[in-house]
Length: 288
Image (cartoon, rainbow, N blue to C red; front, side, top):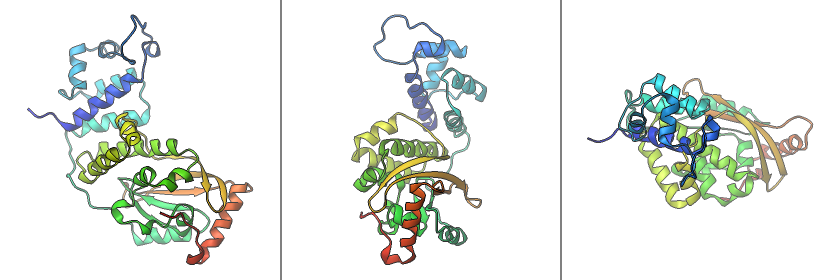
């Protein structure tokens, strides 16, 4: 009998989170020296008040656990809110499976006009596979004119992995990339049968061993807000805040808006960059 792929992913996720913890983290004695780090299955089962055999079947993808039991396991494994959401989302896919293919999302013209009106803030719209669906002129000046890339390559996580200029642009490239991968895996729980997503992961895994390693760590995250430092080739060092808005007509589209604290050097440099976008031929962009 073929195992459910969602339960397989759930089991791999539990295994990865189990490896993140040591006995002392959950109030257990370490005992004899271990060949591998992390909690053993029997220790998780003990703390969740279930048999080792029962927990093993869950982790091997052979058993669909109830929501209360998964919540208890989440407590044992010290899962954060994003990780718990991901875990429960995977379990839910046992009952509701989306179609295997999803067409590329389209941005409403009204949303594009809103982006164009944001002349002082770089902004772009990102889709379910981190597809870059739309952007304004200042975003093109800060990153690149994304229109130079074919649609199938216009994917944020793909650019982070494959484009040298992205590695140079971000002062904390590894942190940014790991977060993008964690967000992509979060999306994969919602659309586990999405063939273009599977193809993207296979392509990047073959292209870059770091991506392959980070993907198999099963870290997950939702899009929220934060601070990023950039080394822009024209205006220099930038420290930018970013925040996420969800599109009302398509919750799988997120609007990412960047800005700088008034009175800071970054604010002045961002306004300088914005002043150069008034004429398209003067817009400084990265070179793909």
